[in-house]
Amino acid sequence: MERRTFGSVPREVPVIGQGTWYIDDAHRPTAVAALRRGLNLGMTHIDTAEMYGDAEIVVGEAITGRRDEVFLVSKVLPSNASRNGTVAACERSLARLRTDRLDCYLLHWPGSYPLAETFSAFERLCEQGKILSWGVSNFDVPDLDAAWKAGGEGRIACNQVLYNLGERAIEHAVLPWCGEHGVAVVAYSPFGHGDFPDPSTPGGRVLEEIAANHGATARQVALRFLVRRPSLFAIPKASSAEHAADNAAASVLRLTDAELTRIDAAFPLGAQPARLPML
Image (cartoon, rainbow, N blue to C red; front, side, top):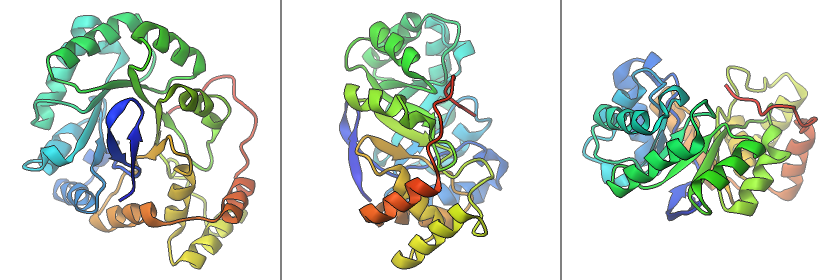
């Protein structure tokens, strides 16, 4: 599994990780088996959140006995992100995850509490060893500027954002900002939300043709395109052990410049939106 430096974190992290949004909708043993298969294949970056229902409980079961292998990430809801609320939320997440620490803790999206207050709580948690780094999610450039000022230079490890072939808005400004400031960019919903390109569409045919050239799948091609830059990571969710294996195989796929150009043309960037899209 290919690994890269994760922003300011002094640790290399798998370029393809495992997302867990809606994983609690699946049959529990199947969900746990999918996560464990992913771990076996090197996808040791597991992302979850307090907002994701019972996902933290599922993850806690999956990583039992293997915690030291995992780069574990969770998120605090903006409504809980006061100084004391952030600490309490983190402790609840740790209990559900059956662990004493998170490798990275994120503010799920900008909220009403001052960033300085949330980040102060993050630093307190770092001092206590309950989190090892922290970052943000769904932050546009103005939010990132404010976070950089409030948190201090080099403190933001990552920005987790919506990024897939049908939604490339981060490429306008967020991705360049993060590259300039040494912040990792983590793509959530990298296959879209139930709208992955169908093989009957022009874009879908391009993915299928490129996949056939490599003995790969269209989803593997899409994942590889999304992590084509050094600062990019992706966290697809897998509904089964077989799906986890398919995701992991994207790590070893190498696309040519010509293939990247074809994909870029098949899924145009589009105009920059007034607000950064999120789910």
